[in-house]
Amino acid sequence: MTLIVKYPNKRTLKEAVGGQLYYIETSVFGPEYMDNGVLTVANRPHITGLGREFFARVTMVNGKIEKVV
Image (cartoon, rainbow, N blue to C red; front, top):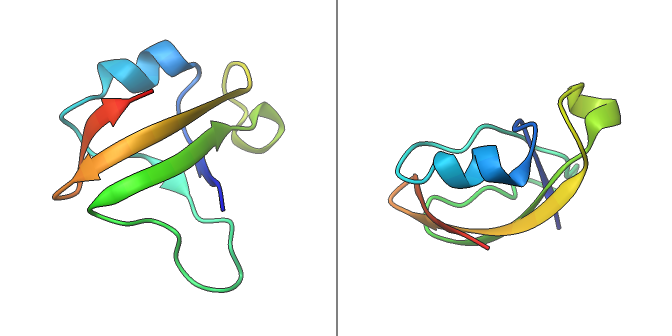
């Protein structure tokens, strides 16, 4: 599953390391977001109205962004 994130580009997401993740849940089967673990995320400009499309893997620790790849 992929979370939609509210960042205009991957660089801005990387600059958010240490902060909370701003996202939109997309699954009708329950929450995809996890406070701890690795999330696959994407910005979809036609949904968020922000920047350009990108994909990333975000490592979350205790509800904070630890790493973005």
